[in-house]
Length: 236
Length: 358
Ligand SMILES: Nc1ncnc2c1ncn2[C@@H]1O[C@H](COP(=O)(O)OP(=O)(O)OP(=O)(O)O)[C@@H](O)[C@H]1O
Ligand SMILES: [Mg+2]
Image: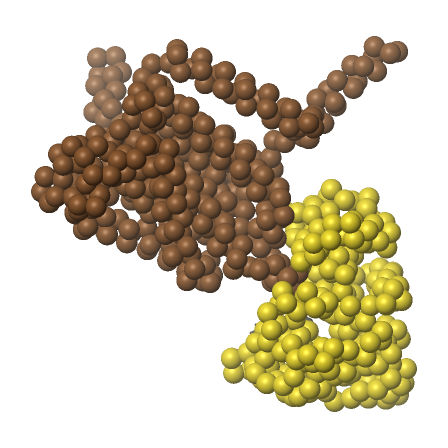
């Protein structure tokens, strides 16, 4: 579904992505793990057209979308849940969700998806009229995910959805990711929480300072010594 | 018709009634202030759209107002009046003999200001906050310099005197219907705009540009749209102000004018329509009431010589106090809405009903 080939991104003099290649097959969960500053968010931003990439290819369903306008990419069915949630703080939950459906015109279907999101996150339904900025971190993350689902994505990019959340909530979030996946959405998941991510992922990539250093099936990476040492904190 | 539409209609009719009574009872000085209130409501709302709802920090309002004021003045004045004004250097022939009716001229004032909004907005709206403020401020000063130097069109520093009264019958008593009529239309227009899908996109951009962009919102289109609509209403407000004053000159459209409007918007609550309306009325009246401070004061047999500008000092001090206690203005980003009023009313009447039952 998505093929990234030899992607390079520079921020001024910083070479943030050094020719990475990633495959996200349809109906799979693929995860991208790595330390702080490895370039995970940059990868997602580059796919979304939010940063200018210097060279390479991002092929989505056979079409190169590299450096296309974000809104065109969104309307092709790719959407990102940004790092740090970034909900619209002074707007209420409902308005946030409606904004998720901004590029869509089909009113009936939007309503249906809104109900789907409320079913997925009953908490959001209870808090429909609450300002997003006054909600807890976990609730805001649910809202950010719900908002992204409102675009009716085929490919969902998630940037550290578990960031700063209590372990119990993290479990919920990962459960939700699985449910969304079951609903037919392909997922590219960026995580620091390598264990949880690799457990639900079909395939994983390990990114270090802008280069892919390791890749493999989720379960295989989970058992890989290097990964365990570096990301799971379990020295053998 | 929904309950809210009914309530809106009823309150508009009530407003018309109140204006009618005020118009026939108030003296000419008070009426002038009332007109000024209406004009500042228009100006505050137009600035609030740009600065409050989309979160752009624009300081170019006086420039758009100047364009509106001059447009409407030159389009409504009779040829003889123009000839008398332009005694140093005659007016350009293509302007000398045009005379349009007031509503058309007023609309043209908005259109030309909006046109300027497109020209300046297209390059400038790609800039970030501080730069945008400087660029728009520069624009409004440039307009002033241009108007001072294009003598055969604007009469330069001499300004234009004897603008016709607001309205089509050339009577002072008609003004109130135009100033407040346009103000009410502006309020309704802004309320519809802000509560619609464009308004939601505006607010999303204000809250978080990157998240808004990631949702597929076209940042530039929405910013430009708000900027141009704001310029349009600023042009109309400027035109009304010119006709109300009767005299315009480039000095009138200094930065201070923009500052006053920014002040009204901040005081009312950045991003609140009702806040801007309330604040525009309060500030306009307060500015006039404080005018006594500029004049001589007599305490017993003692006469204190007035210092012009005292009222601005006092006013700024008052402003600071208000901002310290109400950091987000009178209304914050909240609104008086029918929903809100109806809910309150229910809360008040519910316990009463319960008591009756028991
Ligand atoms: N806007 C920017 N300007 C300059 N450098 C940037 C910018 N954004 C990111 N970088 C740099 O690019 C590199 C990769 O950043 P990125 O945000 O992609 O890392 P990350 O893997 O998502 O890290 P984290 O896990 O902390 O979120 C870092 O060295 C960072 O400092
Ligand atoms: Mg990151």
